[in-house]
Image (cartoon, rainbow, N blue to C red; front, side, top):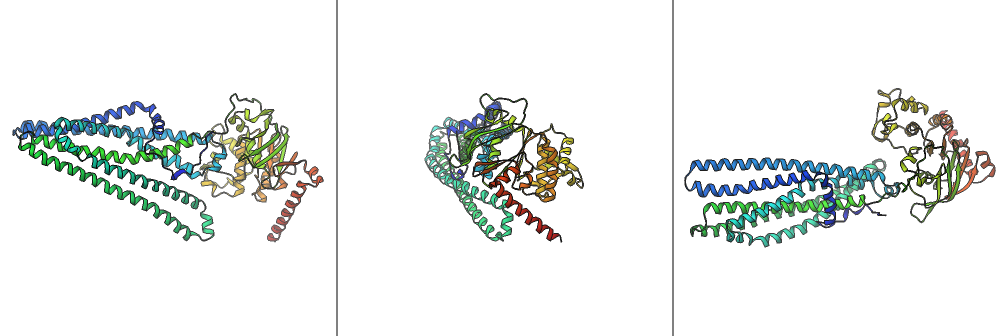
Length: 603
């Protein structure tokens, strides 16, 4: 199993990693013909650009010196034609590489999101959502830049350099050697630039990560900031982080501002040497004026791909860092997977058998310890206990959000680890205390993109839980838009909507996890009224702090510090005067006190 910690923004890998590059290039395989076409177009464009140099030399030596206007006109037309053809080839090449970048970006994003949906909930407990969102957005964008303006362009720049060097040696190898005299100076400057930019890039990535984390955390907790009047202090802290990021960017701008003029000066020095030596050769009649002009034209073009390659270094470095983080995520193996030969149940009866079950999140602290009980088909079972007793952990194991270390959980006599995960969860429905609502309308939040659930079933489910009373005044009924995270709905309304969501899927086993703990009395009555009909002939497990919601359960299981301490009906457990009796008395006193206060307030 591979596990990773996604806090490695400060780490910076090598500028080029052959292992990572090999994996990245696999994404190009489905579009290899597009890559080949882009490379050919780039080579054609480069050839047309080099041909301009030869046309300049021919025009000067053969036609301008000879005063041949007609021949010069033909050369001018050929020059314009070569430029137009180079532009057409460049346009087609640029379009194809940009198209390629977008396709690869789409494929990588889909692969990451598909992989995230396979990971177990424990992974998301340990890894911040903001970092995972960065993997899907920012890091993939960086790779898009490499695919659209990196891989093919680097090939083109290298090919252009080879062509220019060959042309320089073809024209005059002595002048070519003079040109190459300044190359050691250029290499030294480039090496220093890369080292400086690498350090700056590390700082930018680190400080940008801090800024993103700070922004996400404090926007999420804005209500708390305003509640305690911390706006000014939070703003000042954000300003410090933002200034730090700006300073790092400024240093990067400084190095680029120094590097490129330095390359221009080195190029000018090279041209100066050529003019001096070329002038002497012209006077000696061993070099033509046209050859010297063409040679200088080639030298100027010689430095363009060098500058481009220096820019691509930054893109390449960013791509290696982003790809390493993306592949670390993709290499994280899902812990909850189907068995090698899964068993498929064709008729779910809803029987649950828990045998000697023990579970620990971290492998050390046991949340559940040797728990055993059975739930008959159609039976209504309640699980109670103090906070931290292991109630929600038990439900998470039943759903296979996590896998237990000892014992078994069986449904209809089959270990749930042997059942296909998708099939297992399709026969369960879970109503949580903290209801998550998606962007969209009410119908969409009930059917959850399941096209097999028609609007009629949604309306019926909403009616059965009493939510239809809240839809009466809405303009579009069940197709009315729900605000982000259900901002305009009360906690009780959200839970009723979640209850309707579970009913619409018509589960064989219904689980209510603290589903009424934050509901007002009137809303709880709506749910209690629906439960009488809805739980009939359906296996159900109810977890609740309010003992009034589970008094009529067929069986009550009492968990205490991860162990099953008591089990029986409401009356049987009260007679034992054990843990349940204590919980009931404490809850009863709170409810009586709360009812008295409500009555007094009403008066």
